[in-house]
Length: 206
Image (cartoon, rainbow, N blue to C red; front, top):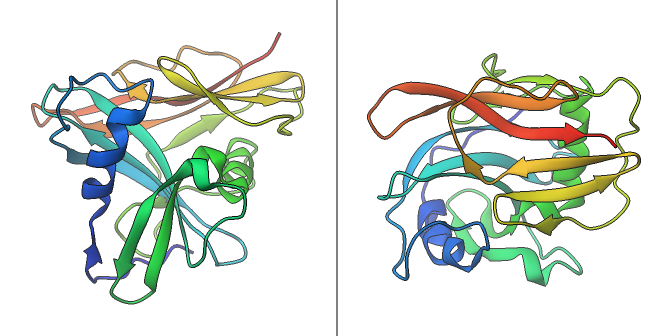
């Protein structure tokens, strides 16, 4: 189960994302750096206990909300320099390499396990606590097996699967889940302080 350490992280996650987000094709801000606040998220467990997995939701000053899967590792991930967001110093765990989790096979495997009902979402900030607000459904027939690397679009990061495609929605909008094939959904805090619901991940089949 996810263990949350109450300690410092330097630079902070928001500081790392402030520098990284403007380089993404789905970033909706202007030329300046975003002014980010944390709006929600959840975690998944790595069965091996080595990789931290977090899905963080942040909102910038323009009221655009982003969904950012992150992984935290104690050593660099081979072949993933293009997905490195930065490094940070954790008060308990030491130096951590922070990656865009869409390109980390541990996060992808656990996200698919969540959709298939083999993994349970965990609270973002409380140790050993399932997050009952995150819901998920899956396709009845499509094998959830990655077939190639993920690719960014204007709004999503798409991961080809055998007979399906996984779409991670990078720009979030409040809405009820509409995709009947498969999805992961949950809540976050809107800029006006209200709690809203939306879809983080959808799966489409041909």
